[in-house]
Image (cartoon, rainbow, N blue to C red; front, side, top):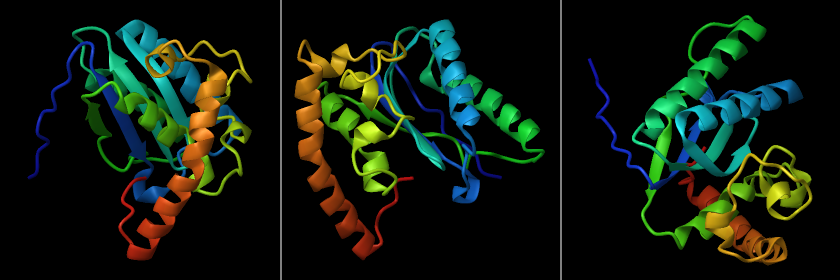
Length: 196
């Protein structure tokens, strides 16, 4: 019988959390599913003392950039969030079994300068996957908040902005679009793309 090695999470540290549907199935089927997940995310982050830096909810996977603000580990936060969402999803669509493929995946962000790159990477997911032409056209990410098209209060943008403007971030992200698309094309040709 296999077991999971405990993962360590620390207060004040940033983590890229990602997960996808079991067998790559969709985890969001309708607009109300995205809304429900975001509502649960807001409640859970306030209760568990976690800061959400940015997010992107894709039809069959999701990305969250989080900061742990207390001794309670990120793993407990994600467990509470995803168990609740899975129960909602299974009940709504009269299904049973695991919604997510496995435990969530995480990457510890050990250098603050990586936050800008990672936020841009997360926000470009809908473009790279061909859902939209421009990241601002995708409503289920925090990008519209980042560039001032929407006044959302879910994310703490300052660790990425560091006092700079939404226009600055928009320019940086638009410059990353071409690079990310070229990278995806290269990975697809070699069949090495293992991100959700």
